[in-house]
Length: 216
Image (cartoon, rainbow, N blue to C red; front, side):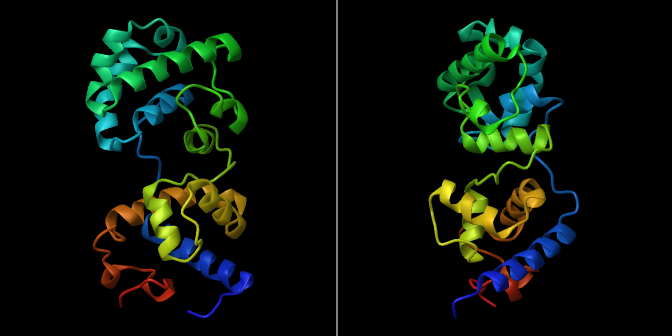
């Protein structure tokens, strides 16, 4: 493929976004939550676990520990048992209690609204912070780069990087800031339904004519 100019890349990216937005008009965060605190908890649990499994666990978790004060006071063994099926349950329970304790001690029990402050909380890195800011507060501070976003960004030649932070940086340079949160959801939906890791269904892909990796 000939080298693509920055202008041409942005124009192609805009068309990719338009087509995906039309294809998945209901794209949204797949983690069930009712407030920023619940989203933070669910996102911590989603590490190395499916969103479906997390959504099965969180109703009981939120019933027992509805806020930061309740979670900070949780008995470790009880919390581990509730989140056991999400995997790495000991580490996740420790992070949840640590996160809630930090919220009480440093933020009056409320989630902060900056990447720096969120990422300083136990169990929350840049990706999780982006999830919280974009979906709980409507703040487009960055692009969530999970396995789907990373894979599709490479296949679409939006980036040649493999490190999530560098992939995010490239995407932020291509797409307008007000699209960053929804962009991740659109790529995740498409990655799950069409652009499979092992067997991409290029013959059913609305982006086939725009994708350098298309097999059709």
